[in-house]
Length: 232
Image 1 (cartoon, rainbow, N blue to C red):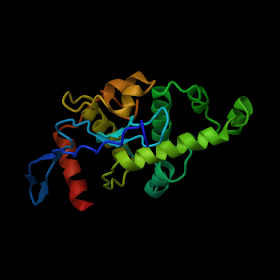
Image 2 (image 1 turned 30 degrees about the vertical axis):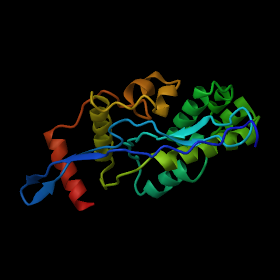
Image 3 (image 1 turned 135 degrees about the vertical axis):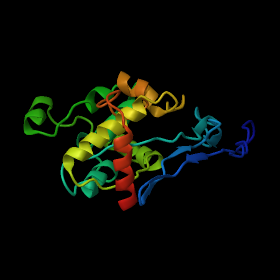
């Protein structure tokens, strides 16, 4: 089209990932902790441009995204499948704190006034009576869909079984505390959580606010984790 530049060719994406690991033996068992570093050079290569004529034409649409770590557990037995459904399939931010926190960051990043509505929880009858019906269900579905897309692209999980609920909760707390106290484990400058209205999320680099900076894992905990990971 005369007077309009062609969409530029995209730059080749070059990234380096590293893995550090070491095997430890505990009698007949072994434990191999590892640290994965993705996009070690913190590349910010543009991978899409706006191609439609208008104000967004040739505007960078997407850049290489950072990796996200998820640490968590649940209090009941045999609830993992239902919890994964709540996070990834059933689009309801009032049933998943991760969905709610990601939606908060997405809306806050755009200074979207719908954030005030997103904060309202209508799970119980009392709360529905207090807040009334959802005033903009179309907007709610749009944000929920954006949260789902973000989680499916950026979240990955490692699962192991701890049969006793008290042990699950203890390990969860110590895993979160260990990561939050790690000075070398901070997020990239482009991490979505930096747009969160929650200061604890912005400063910790984690999508949660509880159990931060508490008691970390010790040698005995690492030994127990080695047993659980070998058996999974």
